[in-house]
Length: 204
Image (cartoon, rainbow, N blue to C red; front, side, top):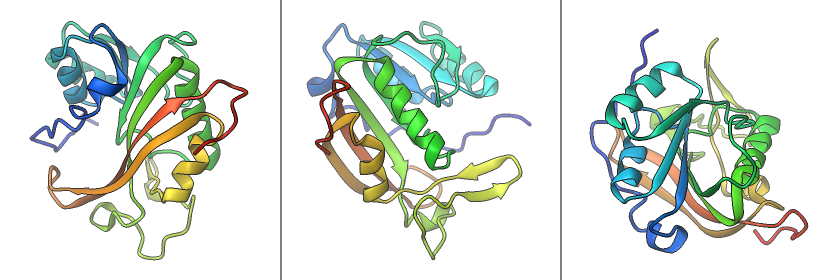
């Protein structure tokens, strides 16, 4: 199946965050890079960008847009190609909604592992009321939507996100937003979190 991506515009959602979460020579991982729009924006800011995705087709699309970015095929649940403490910043723009509870914890743990001490995590996650994009009207935490045998989608509440961050990150901001960037109104959470030391405990 050919890789498909429907977003035609880029909303520069990272722009307000960058001055406070990464320096001018910072290292960034675009986790679940898709066609590479976030990677392109980050590269244009002069940052050293690595991009990864589970999809070979997505990586091929991102490489066309970002020939100067290092691309790797990687599973978000372990980020195996990357060493511990490699990045100043990890960005995940609507790329971590494919997993049930246990694997969601693994993915957030992998982000924690690859961040430097005091590194930052910027993310967007499908919101529980993202009805135009499949969120069920009778929402139950951690019930994943099986759209097809090969397509699964998770929707998040505030409490679910805080659970994933607890003990790993200090939550600095979490805001529920809506966007018309997509073909239909999209509901999502946008968050910023700072990496905690392994023994720091939860401050979410």
